[in-house]
Amino acid sequence: MNQQAIIDRPDREDRAARARIDAAAKLLRGAKSDVSDDFVALLFGRAAPEDLVGYEAAELAALAREAWAFVATRKPAAPKIRFEQPKGSDGEHLKSISVIEIVNDDMPFLVDSVMTELTERGLAPRLVVHPILAVARDKAGQLTAAPSEAGRNKDEARESFIHVHVARIEDVERLAAIVHGLEQVLAEVRRCVQDWRPMVRRVNEVIQDLKSNPPPVPVDDIAEAIQFLEWVAADNFTLLGVRDYTLTGKERDLKPMLETGLGVLRGGDVPVLTRGGQVVSITPQLRAFFDEPKTLIVTKANVKSIVHRRAYMDYIGVKRFDADGNVSILVPTATLTKGINEISLVEIGPAGTRPVSQYSFAFDPR
Image 1 (spheres, rainbow, N blue to C red):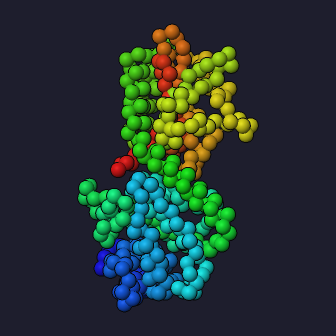
Image 2 (cartoon, one colour; image 1 turned 135 degrees about the vertical axis):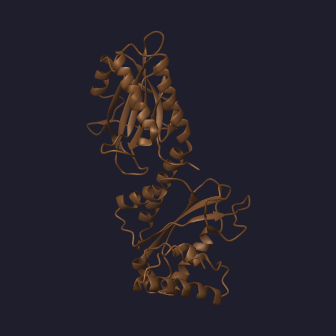
Image 3 (cartoon, helix red, strand yellow; image 1 turned 180 degrees about the vertical axis):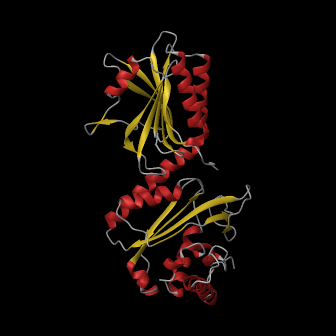
């Protein structure tokens, strides 16, 4: 049995946790369950011992049995969420908890994004485990073999399995609202990860365009903007989205080019700026930016990210000009991954219309 996940310390809680895992697996074998011998350890082996020892072996066996049934099928390229109340007949401790389970393609930002969403909704986790599974499924999404702990084999299919215990919730409407919130978070995470490479390419294209077709601003300012964007692209920011905007009309509003959106700005007019509680397309600070001999602007967006960290994104804008002198702007949104300050959104204005974006760096999007 794979018990390496629990640190081998001569501690009473560690020993008790190992004993409960062994006893739960023995109960499932005795009941001739179809749960694989290693699954209890795979599921709970990395749990904090102090959280695990509050459960009896029979309760862990019941939780593992339900988790096994939940993992058994999953549609490709889509998360599967379960928010259930364990049967009170399976153990006294289970009467006081609800269980949230999410099985999904393995990707960055899943646990921190999910846990932040639960915290925002007033849920305090009592136990959290996150095994990464190596799985084999048929075309219908059914497991064809027992899952195992994922290793470093690049050819294996990897799935994230998040298992969380919170105080019991019986309110059906609240349960549905929490599941809906988790669905939105997971969809945003997937868009950011899927579009990571295209967003990085977009930033690098802007850098090359600034070098080959510099805007009519001081050379030193262009050089500084290029240096900053290169620093952004060097894994110092978590980019969340990118989209192009054009400056239009007498009021000089920024009009998004919806088809250019990537990441969280893909599909639909996602707002990134507000003023006085109202969504706006441009702020006085941005209007002033277009009149200044500046290439780049960095400012705080008024919208919080639901990916990675629940923080206000930073707004990075790069001014760009077409052959007729018309101005457009590219806007990426991002969060800083290195350093003290945080930058969440970037706008860049290039020749012709370019997208406004949010980007994510510093992870390997599998």
